[in-house]
Amino acid sequence: MIVRVLIADDDPLIRDVLRDVLDDEPDLEVVAVAADAREAVELAGRHSPAVVVLDVRMPFGGGSHAAAQILRRAPGTRILAFSAYSDAGAVDDMRRAGVTDYLAKGVRNTELVAAVRRLAGG
Amino acid sequence: MHPDASRDNDLFRLLVQGVRDYAIFALDPGGHIVSWNAGAARIKGYAAEEIIGRHFSVFYPPEDVRSGKPEWELRTARAEGAIEDEGWRVRSDGTRFWANVIITALYDDSGELRGFGKVTRDMTERRRAEQQLTDRRRLLAHLVEAQERERQRIAWDVHDDTIQAMVAVDMRLQLLAGKLPAEHRATVDQLDGAVRASISRLRNLVFRVRPPGIERHGLRDSLAVYLADTSTAAEIRYALEREPGADAAITIFRICQEALTNVRKHARASSVLLELSTADRGFLVRVVDDGVGLPDLDPDAGHFGLIEMRERAESAGGWCTVLGRESGGTVVEFWLPDVRS
Ligand SMILES: Nc1ncnc2c1ncn2[C@@H]1O[C@H](COP(=O)(O)OP(=O)(O)OP(=O)(O)O)[C@@H](O)[C@H]1O
Ligand SMILES: [Mg+2]
Image 1 (spheres, each protein chain N blue to C red):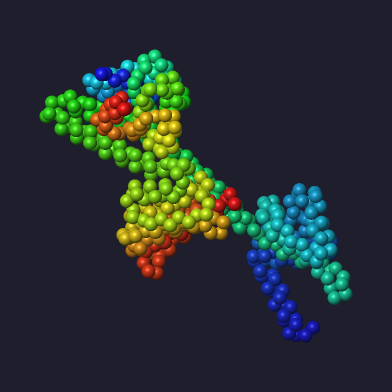
Image 2: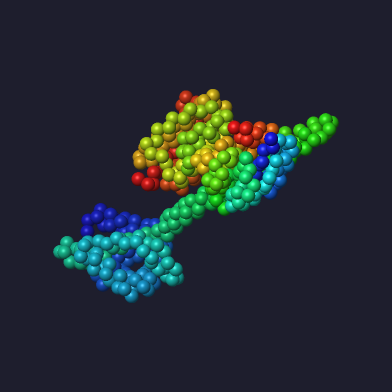
């Protein structure tokens, strides 16, 4: 089964490479790419991804806001927070918003891919 | 007159005339100058023959003359015996100086007012020094604040832009390495390693220029993280009765950081103790090492760590001293007031 993934990050470089890394895996498919929190909510509504890889700090409310909105509409969505903002407070905010897992930017690609698979499977 | 008494009087007159640091002169009951000394000539700029007989209000700035201050001072001195005043006075060339003035009413044995004694000191230099000190303090406080703001900006820029871009490059390199034939893969893996090392160095830099989360995690944890990060083996004794406010916390953190940098760079210590306690309604902090101790310092040697520690403490209203310990090693001790109390 192919896992449908949505990516949301305000940094274009990260966005593009994230897509390529995940799309490179035969069992993952990036169905949409958002550049801010508002777009993330909108695209999640339209594409019903199984997993959302969400940046923490983004325009229009940030990752925690987007996570809460996405989960309100589609409670089954699994969300992976992916951020350089390795601040315990930011992680707490994300967890409170219902994020399933958290990865700090800078992890190996393999770890990231494994995390997405884990979320989709669990 | 008894010859001894007359000699004493002469001596006394010579003393008064010769004093150069004080203007000492006498006024008649109406306020006209009747004697003059060397100090008066130096401070006020008039020779005796120019000034004797004139009214002492010539020493006052026009606004004081208009408001009747000279006469008021004489009246007060007469009523109360003496009056002391600090204020601007005018020299013969019209320039002003900041004066400390004491006017004393002089009565003879029968109780009749004979005149006034006036002693004036030029306080301009002292006043300027005091003024400069506070201007300097203000400037320092401003600089420290500007520095923190600038550091925060740099930290965010590096954090948000540079590290972010390098993370993307790193991810891209990993992706690429997986697609390359084996002979090129090693090269790209090497590049990837270099990028990852740079990312980690930049993260350390960001942390050093702007320790995150003092506000969130408190001073103690931030210090502990810093120590762990710099692999300085130190014991922390944290006994503050109250958490310092944000400004004090940053100042404490920065001074500790500077002191610990010195321990690492210079002390060759086997242990460091970081002691924070509450004292005199403020925060007392000691950074104690058991290293080689302080050398005799050349104050002009271009070392700024110790200076910066002191400036930071003083501009926060506290103090900072650095001492060699008798048992060897060095103590940096500083205190900051808890301004909220
Ligand atoms: N804990 C210490 N143990 C031994 N020597 C010390 C210690 N702290 C400071 N010193 C001595 O005092 C000198 C002045 O320290 P200071 O922090 O002012 O300058 P610095 O460390 O040499 O340079 P920088 O301006 O980079 O801080 C040092 O060069 C060192 O010789
Ligand atoms: Mg130093």
